[in-house]
Image (cartoon, rainbow, N blue to C red; front, top):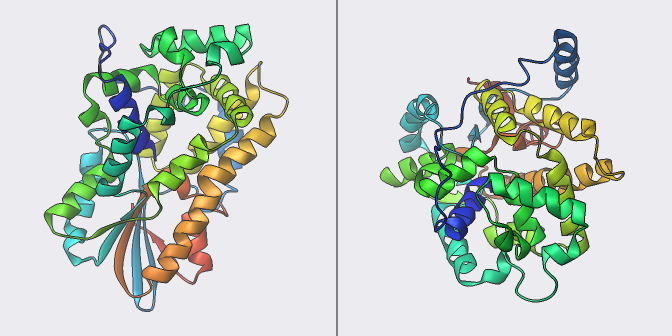
Length: 335
């Protein structure tokens, strides 16, 4: 999903000039800088989560083997190591499953590029008119850091403004200056490698239905989620760097737990924050994970397969790994 939204962002803002003095996002780790006692409490909380670590797993049961890969949807040179491990596996597989394959992603991007109502308000009041003045001021300041002018922000659909905020200034600058590199994450690299060996690549979901989670939500709900995105927009470049470093340590459960703790600690967190977090988790993780497992249960019962999805989908009792274990697969961590 993130790689597709990066593509949508690149399509929309590709004509904007890149941020001055742009360089690759710096490596930073705010978790490592936490006081030792707070960090220990955070790790203790994560230790209670099933399958909270590991980006590469083997799930096996008689007749079926699934290699599960937790991906990071943005480019990073460190993907090369895992690609060296995964690429030799591809010729011996029956299929690769991803959130949305190259063909489906391209088709949706084309539709969104021609139908501006996906991402922009084409009728009715603008965001400027719908948001409280203080919220609007905070939003435009955050967007300015991402090189997005206020007149464009005013016409954004709230869901798209929120998604834009979820990407740090350094990553949006990369999308503006080199969109192909920005979206060349691990899943994209795997799909290209699969194509080179003629390995079929299947989408786990209908990309247009998935984007409908955002686009079809009532305006009031979109506005609430936008305010949640603003609450979570705290030192975004450092947050992005922290999450990226945790990913490359295989700590996807830590990523989620730390991110939610940051939102809860925000002085302007909305009163219904817990409900917003629960809805967010249900829509973007829990429901999608369950649908993917149902598809694999139907289509991947016999043979050898690889499933590559965002690492946030792996952990917890509603995660892909736990659900596979519940379906009779024996799990072995490979990284």
